Image (cartoon, rainbow, N blue to C red; front, side):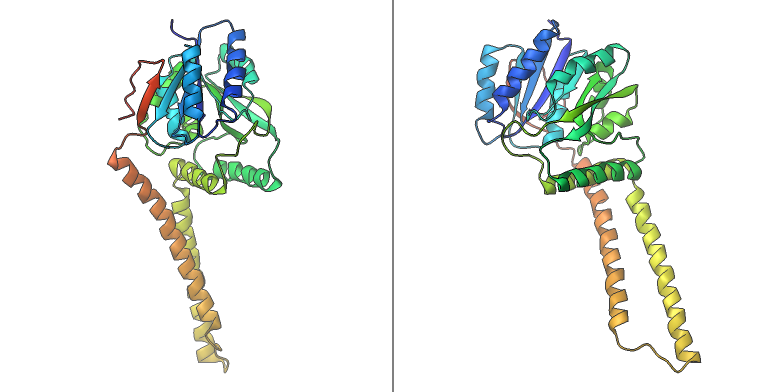
Length: 317
């Protein structure tokens, strides 16, 4: 029987929480009294996550497991889930239970009202440091200003998308994927459902500061070339200031008895200008690196094992 709802659950080293995640997800979906499937993606876990999920698959045929050959990342895991999802509506949620599966019925209600995308918007973030909350808020607003896509703030991948939206995204062949950006880019009728984000049920975050910075850079470079335009403006501005400084030095030399003393000011200017040059080269490198990844045309992910599903995807090797 074709499921009405597909739930995509990426998991990486989540042995402490995965059983509780399954229990809460299955309880919510059973209350809907409609066919469903839970698609867990084991993203190359090094703990017992895959073994626990395999045991769950034996007991519950509504549960599918896609086990990657290695760790490919959060976005490829969601992509794999979307490739294998068969439901009329596809719901995405992380395994750590920070996003409540109990919000699914409200999302589904909005979907039935005619919305094609229903995303969860965080009104409060529990269990996170003040630094994490501050940087997250700055990131979402900076990203929205830098990109050419109307990206909603304070949202993640926790959302419902209609089958037609899922099919459109499946045919986008980008390698460095930023799912929430793609969902906004494709358009369609979208709305938000607010909720309080809880602290992790157990285990440690899979998005430390380094990965958050990488995700931010991926989001910006995937949907905007404004950083390159900013580099151009910086270059023009520094050139203008340098020319102005040159005129001042020439005036002092030709028409006054004062001369520029020492090399400190010159060294400062040179170091500053060279720093700008390196930043610009770094920005260009980010874009060139994305081009390099795209032209290699490697698969987004590779699946080592599939349980309870015979479907084949075009995106894996």
